[in-house]
Image (cartoon, rainbow, N blue to C red; front, side, top):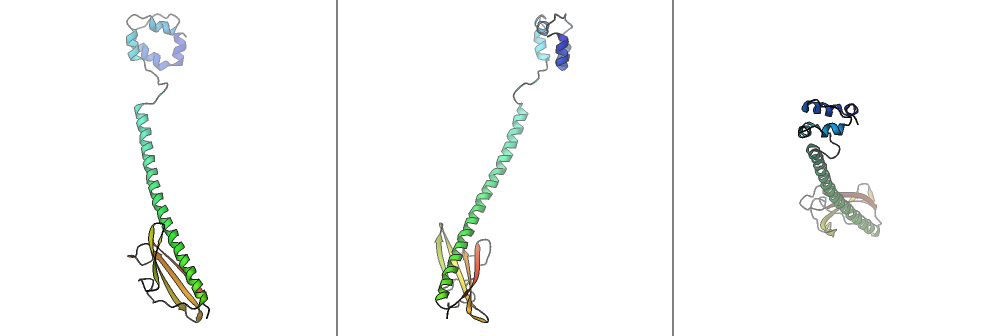
Length: 187
């Protein structure tokens, strides 16, 4: 490859060579031109601008690592949040099943005969005969129910069941499930 062809291929590297090396006779091959200059070869090595052909610079590696760390931390936070919401959903499901089970039990009892009416505040406090504790899925839940006659309908009873995990918070909220239904009674 002669010097003119090399110059057309990469003009920047030849400009840097020409700044470091005095004009030399051309011998036809670029490799001969660089190799046959006495004492100049060392100077050429320090002045040649090398083009990168493979690998990454330290800045590129640090930027990629930083992006990876940021994405990993975001994913870890989402994973922790998903686990927490999954636990809450599981608790809500268990409480819903316990409430539905109690509704079914009370509805079956109402088919046998009229149910005893509960005190008006049976959902807010543990009234005798209208509250129980149930252990399910490694946790203890409190169930309270209210049974009341429907006005103008002697054969229909309203049943409300509230299930909660923590007895200190009796009002409906995120940790509470409440189901209501109407049941016909047999006289």
